[in-house]
Image (cartoon, rainbow, N blue to C red; front, side, top):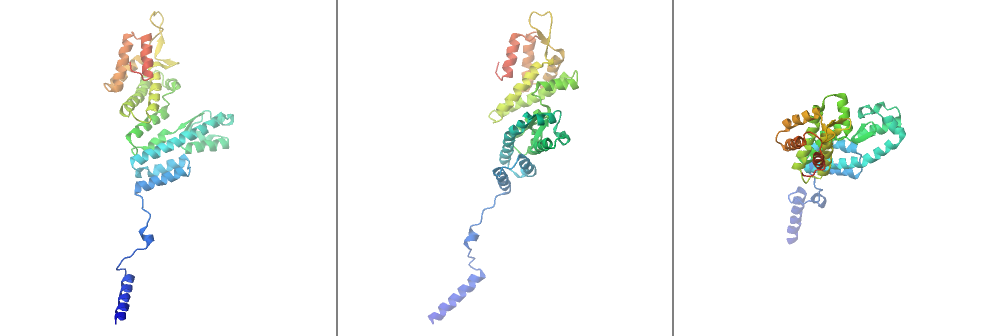
Length: 311
């Protein structure tokens, strides 16, 4: 009798087990690989691309489609990593410019004209350069920050976004080169005021950045650009100097050019009492103290400002 009850109980247990009432899981079902959340999954895909040494063009294309899905902290890392990779590759691209065969093909060629290069080897090299996020200006190569600015847009932190915007504007007009002033005025004669407004806008951005993001990893670069802009702002260029030779003066050889003087007044009115506006006003006061001449004291004052020294 006891044996019958045992057999019956085992039969009922088998029925329950097969029907799933006990819901017993196998080891494989209890050890599922965890799923990443949306942004983390995208960021891990990006890291895999980095580990596989994908070129900048692939990384930029990926970010162009997916950066909107990333958290800002992850987006910052992703954008900075591609810029770092571009900086490393920039050296290799620049090495080709030492080759006469390449340099002679690139004279007066800009990014939009690379398909016009006659030598197929040089043409393919230039196209690859553009595809990987670089800009070509004759025999000069630089990172295309305008492209990065379009991709990063509002998806990265303000600190990184503002820095990229500064680099993008510099890349667009090459304000840091003195030849840019000569080139500008060659196309737009008697337009010193317009140029000073543009360089003042760039200076204003660098002043705001260095005040707002004092601990930024990009502060050294922004200060470098600020110094280069100030050099042009104070002295102009050899062909378009802010100070002109003034005969008959026993105080100095140079007196402020009328166009530049008017441009400084215009800039003061534009920026008012913000940091850069106060900066211009202080300089203008120093200029008036020296009776508009480039005196030794004024020269010392200017150079301290260019070198980011307090006076």
